[in-house]
Length: 496
Image (tube, rainbow, N blue to C red; front, side, top):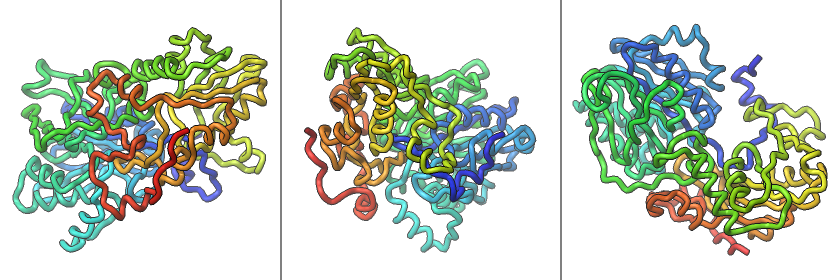
């Protein structure tokens, strides 16, 4: 039996957050007058569950009338067949949430719903608006009552104000987006159709799919929009293309309309490719599995080691470990077995279990590890909270040496654009050199992939990515007070 949603904030639950950047959000939309759009949205969100596990919601439009259901918990906890049957409609949007702005409570669950002179609208958002404080002050001066603590509500209210001033849905959405600074990939459902919008830098992903009619570009048909292509695959939608940075797509009974509302200056988050998105999602015409394996190829060229086995930290390190083994010629093995049924929180009743917390998720294979020199591959070390426990578990299982290779550079700066990477003082590479991290986690050697290697592996123009978490070079200016909330005043250490 699944845990009830209340478990997500249970006071006795001990957080076992991974040593990774935490999830952002997943957005989904479907326009299909002949299909069960609520069920399609459910499956789309299910495929995007890795992007957020705190809350889920779906809003449908049935001949102009809105139906909404949202709550705390996983998609499978929030929705069942009875709930989905209460959400009829011809188009819908959905959202998985991980709170990067706003607390984790049901009031902040998305989609955000607002009323306008043209009817209700629902808005789902992936990203983070960095000028939210300024926008909030302006809305309060307009005598708005804010019901949530999210930046999503701010976007929705500015759009509603523009509609109420006489603008149509497209013009109102553009008006609201032009006020926002930062990262936002949006799906918006209205009584007349669906909007899919991406910020001018395209920091967070958004893709368009098609699954009906004769021509995906002209005339009526069935369309889907998702944060990743895995959200399209699950509803059998063909991936047409990405929603472009600074582009607005309007989907209605008349078909598809594209508006370039802002000058594009693409800065896709590189961490989407390194870790965050699912490995079966398609970026630049190939799966992220292929890209991540290529990271391992380059990592092996940059930092080889004299070991007996290459093994991954499952599941995030698997493609890079395979690539490392492929290039190095050293055998690949799985020495850690992952329990995939452990969620974000786990009730740990004893001190012994807290001390051995990593065993809850990962259990070593003694017969594989006994007497072996191991090279462990993972995609990142962010806080450094679990790597040492993994290394100790491998040594306890009989490994004679444990070396570690990371298929991305050291994470030295927090993200302000929709991924929770903690404040800078919690990032181990911001306060310790590589040699100090090596000693801290207890490995015989530690090496990271170079920044150049990570970007070269994309086989794209390297200037079109945001890699601020590795460099501190933010593509969108961060307000000083917001910046100070997460950044240390002193500079980060020089790598050893």
